Amino acid sequence: MSKPLLIGPFTQLLPMSGLPLKGALPDEQLVIIEQGGILISEGKIKALGIFEDLKSDAVDIHHIEGQHVCLPGFVDSHSHICFGGSRARDYAYRNSGKTYLEIAKAGGGIWDTVTQTRKASQEDLIEGIISRSKIHLENGTTTIEVKSGYGLSIDEELKMLRAIKQADKKTQADLIATCLAAHMKPKDWNSDKNYLEEIASNLFPQLKSEGLSNRIDAFIEESAFSALEIAPYFKKAKAMGFDITVHADQFTTGGSEIAIHFGAISADHLEASTENEIQLLANSNIISTALPGASLGLGCAFTPARKLLDAGGALAIASDHNPGSAPMGHLLTQASILGTFEKLSNAEVLAGITFRASAALNLADRGILEANMLADFVVFQTDNYQEITYHQGQLKPNMVWKKGEKIYE
Ligand code: NIG
Ligand code: FE
Image (cartoon, rainbow, N blue to C red; front, top):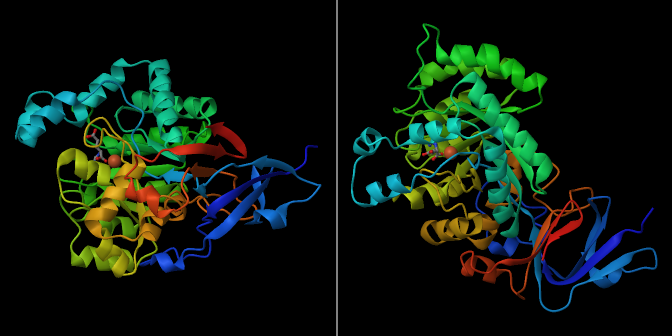
């Protein structure tokens, strides 16, 4: 058996450990280990501390030259990177002032991506996911949630979820699949049966038997599904043991209350949440997820991240990378910009893309650097962690490690 590997010294090692899951987080609470080292074995962290203290004859050493800051690998807890085609036309229409209705009439919107995704083969989708994951990985994201939701029939949703499962085997990032068959009512649904009932009865069991996903999401919005329509759907999902996550309060409210009622792991978007929803979310165990990429893509308000944190809520920040509302897909840029507009500390931004995001995926083995956690970490060539958000994503990681393997340098 090979010896454990000691990596370092890092000018600053930020384990993001010992911090609360909920509430405001001043930078003074961050633990910074100077001249730190990480000892890894079999993909996991064995120990963490001052580099010199971890040195011994029993370890191999990967020496880091120069000034570096090391953080947990980023976790993107909300993305739609499985899709076909492009919606550049929607973007141009939006920027020229066209309304949602005009764009839909011109053949745009989510349904356009559904049409283009249905035309793509499973292999095409796998390739798309892998190439997008590679960019995310190089930007420091080692775990990426990926939703279906552009299939909107049992067979097409299965195609997407199977593509995500296959892509997960072929990329070094961990892909966490979520079933978003409740993204909108399929325009071509011409059965007398209720679409959501059909999905729950015929797709949910298949997700279990093929091990395709353990997470059910729904878009609760006037243009998609009402809270009333979603309640029996979530009830069935809960009864089958799925984790629930919700696209909530993006343009109108109602979604976050349903999310809390069904004990969802996370409620995402929340741009339209008012004081009432903010209080309810903060008093619950839910992770509230801001998606600044959608605000930037649509030219809309940001999620009230400051208010959510000050009320005592748990805030994750995710990219929402999708071809329609959030085509940029650069998590660190978006999280940094959210910090600028919402007045978030560095600790709050970094918590939002590390341990608070892993909580949004119900994953207890990442997002923090400490013994027994996955050896997933990202390294930036700088002597000061504040430089990372300051450069708003333009300071690129110079190394990314996933499960103890250096996968990018
Ligand atoms: O999270 N809000 C709904 N769904 C996506 C947008 C998907 C699309 O426009 O294709 C979102 O922003
Ligand atoms: Fe989304």
